Amino acid sequence: FQEKQEGVNRAFRVSPATTLDYILSKTVLFTIMSVIYGALLLLAVFGLDAAYGPVLLLVVLTSVMMTLLGLAIAVFFNGISDWFFVGLAVLVLNLLPVLSYGMPTFAPDWLTWIPSYPVLFGVRELLFPTGASGFMTPLLLQLLLFNVVAFVLAYVALDRKLMKAG
Image (cartoon, rainbow, N blue to C red):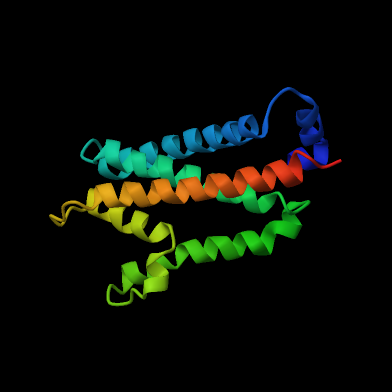
């Protein structure tokens, strides 16, 4: 939103950079920040006993997905005050799987389709193993699918709304 207010997006539109460049710049920045925060949190809580590789892979895929969804949604708002309630709704929606985490018997089908649901339980299994096996490949494939959908949404929204605006 600050970029919109300062006219950075207008300057970006006249540069040789593409919509893909814009998406990659935002995604890389937020993914690096997420990995740093995730690694520091893992180190603080688990020391060197955590499954850093798989957990950070989930952090990367989740960060990319949420960044792309954020870009796809935020492009339709002029400022943070306009976006606030929509952003809050997206946050609450992604927090709903915590209900199933706290009450394992509550897992309606619609709740399991929220992208944060499989991530929450995947991270739990990685950090507090129960002996479940074979969960990582389906989880990664599901996250990759969510990322492809989020990328398409972000690309179309940004290309049509932000990069073509006058």
